Every structure is written in C-alpha cells, then in structure tokens.
Image (cartoon, rainbow, N blue to C red):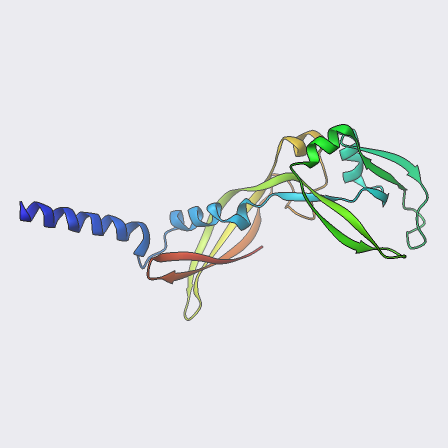
Length: 193
C-alpha cells in the first residue's frame, strides 16, 4: 500500500512539473501562452470620432453598414485642399452597436473641447505559428511567431481598411514574445508587435 502511494505521488509530481515547472519551453506551450494572453486577444479596432471629420474609407464603410450618418460639411482650416469633410453621427443601429465598443474622451481643437472617441472592433489576431525559440542569457526565452488578422462579423460586413492595426488579411506578420521562467513555470512578459 505504501509503495502504491509513493508511486502515485511521484506520478502526480511528474505530471505537475511537466505542465508548469519544466526548464524547457516547448513550441506548443509558447503558442498556448501567447494565444491566451490579453494582449493577443485584444480586438483590432478602427477609430470613430462623431462630429466634424475628414471622411475616409473607414467612415464610408461604417456608413454603408448603417452605423453612422454622414452629412457633407466644410473642412477646417488645418485640412488639406483635397480632403472631403462632413459631420458624422451615430445612427440608431450605431448607438445600439456602440454599447459593445470601447470609448474614451480626449481634448481637441481650438477652442479646446472634450471629444468622445469610439474604438470599433473589426478584427482579432489569429493563426499563431511559432517560427523559432531562442534563449537569451539574463533575459529569458524569446519566441518568434507569425500571426494574421481575422475580420469579425462587423469587419466582414463593412470591409474596413485595417492596414494600420493588422497585416493585410490572410498575410502574416512577424512578432516576438519574451518569456521568463519562475519557480512555478514560464510566464509571458512582453510581446513586441
């Protein structure tokens, strides 16, 4: 009985260490830690500022999706001569959808005023492929990996220009992640996009 208990304890310890306290960091574990991180799961967004704006592709896309209404207007003093400007307002559908968007305020313009800004989620990161692991003495383990963007339902509907926040759809972007080993296993410290 004592021998069986000792064997069971050794098995439990071995399985625990294999899952967390291994000195090795596998590609599979690296991929899992990156995919589970809040930085990787963070939505890719386009910015929407209701009010007077330069009308770009993303605003036209939001208009086609029925989320904003654009009324033609004059451009301000600081705009380029070829800019197309207008007043942007959320539609009823846009107000409903905006409940799921992140928003903040910033100070803008002359005279200075507080302006609401929305971050409209249109895509997420996906398709992690670990391309290399390299141990850096005194720093930790660096994992190089590729990822791509996947448009969400709204992104597929409005087809925004996500080039500022994502590599072109179905193309991969190379990034790196830094891992450090602690007594309880490896932890993701930083991702360099």
